Structures are given as structure tokens and as C-alpha cells.
Image 1 (cartoon, rainbow, N blue to C red):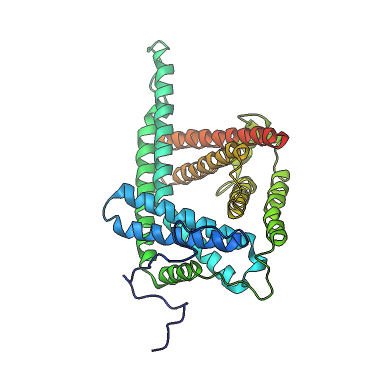
Image 2 (tube, rainbow, N blue to C red):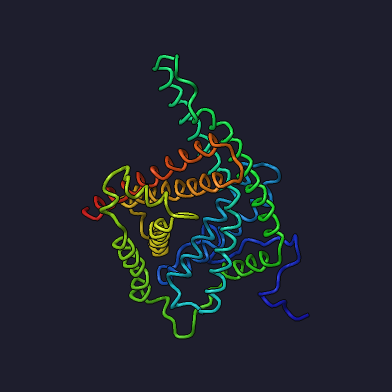
Length: 349
């Protein structure tokens, strides 16, 4: 019987086995070919996480941990394919990179919705408690309950309903994706990658100068992206001008995109250093954490703004959602301020 072409999907339910050989867990790195070794390590990690997810059953913590590991391996393979694209077979690398990006987005959506809901409900509770504490400090006569406490409960219920619905849809989409022929084709491609990396003809993955030059490009791209940021505007922890610009932007905040790009490029640079066996740079970790907080706050602000656009909501509910959106945009600006401060300190080291 002729072998099945690699692009065809496996029958549903057929397990992907972890590889043996150079890419297997615990196998030593090849000092002369770090890109191959790293890709095979991450492909093996992907397959282990996939098996762990299948074996997790109904355990939510184990499933979440397995999905987190699966997405982490997918991110690393995708970033490495991007960094060392000139060495790889171009069409194969581009296709697998796009498929891993699709899979990571599908698997992460459910947990992102849950995290966003927890963040927004926690912020609403703090706002309500702060308003209540201020009201308690003022004589009660002539001071009826303000619009924030009146609208906070309904705003929370609306966010709970919308984001829980989005989470359930994302969960269904993830299950559909994991059972699809498209996913099985991705898993097959990663299984092949765990034992063989398709380089283009004439490539020099063993040449440390070539590999090092490609890795160093990630630092140059990151530096250019950071240079394009309005770091001077981020000089204050709560920047009223920038918050106003973000609040006025319809359908999301376009000014966030350059910051999200820096976050992605910083991650790519970290993975390029990992591929070459370099130790993580402790000095860049605070900046990465600040950009993570920036992304979370920006996404939460977008969710609050979307809820505020719900037709026929009561004015106190809309008011509470507006305050919540403003608070999240302030957190965006605080994260930008933290990033510009810690990054300038890092580059001076």
C-alpha cells in the first residue's frame, strides 16, 4: 500500500506518538545545528502536550495546563519558523506557521474570555466598593445612591452573559478544531518536524554565522518597533491625553497595535535566543510583563466598550460600563509607562 501523503489528515482518534531520536524528550542538543535541535524539541513538546490534553479527561485544571503547554510549543515553533525562514523550505514553513497561528488562537480564545471576565468583574467590585466608601464618609441626607452603584450590578450581569456566551462559543470552536481534518494535518506536520526539518537546498543551518545573523535580526526588528512607539507620551503613569485618544477611537484602539507588535517581537526574540541555547535575559522580563498587562487591559477595555454598545441598556448600566472602560484604558497607560521606564533602564545596563 502506498504511504499516505503528509498533507492528508489522520483518521479521527488516531494518536500522534511522541518521536524517538534527536527530537525526543531529554535528547542532547546538537551544538552544530541548534535550529534543528530546537524545532525538534518544541515539536516533541507539542506532541506531549497534545497527548496530555487527550488524557486529561474532565479535569479542568489538567486540561488548561495541557492547552497552555500546547500553545507554548506552538508559539515557539511558529516564531522559530519565522526567524529562520531563509534556511527553510519556504512554502512548507509559511503554511505550517499560519496553521500554528490559527491553532493557538482557537485554543486560547476560551481562556482569554474567562480571564477577561474575571478582570472586569473584579474591577467593577473595586469601583463599587470605592464609591460606597466615599458615600459612607458623606452625611446620608440629601445624597441618594449614585449611578455607579446602581449600574454596577447590571453591568456585571451583562458582561457575565456576553463573555460567558463568547467563552462557550470559543469552547465549542476549540472542540470542533481539535476534531477537524485541518488540526490532524497540523499534528501530522508537527510529528514529521519532530524527526526531520525540511531545509531549502543550499541552506547552511550548521553555519553559526548564518544562524547568528538571522537571530540577531530579531533584535533589530524589536529595536525599530520600540523606536516607533510614543514613549515620551508614556512618560506619565496615567496619561490623560493618551487615554482620551484611546477612548475616542471607534471599534477598538488602533493606537494599541504598535504596542502589541512590540510584545510579539519581544517574544520572537526570546525564542530566537532559546534556539541558540542562550539564557533568558532577566533585564527584559519586566518589560515583557508590562506588555502582557497592556494587552490584557486593552482587551478588557474593548469588551467593556462592546457591552456599552448593547441596544436599550439602562443609563446607569451604560455609565458603569463607561467608567469601567475608562479604568481599563488608564491601566493601559500605566502599563505603557511601566514599559518605557523598565526598558530604558534595561538598555542602559
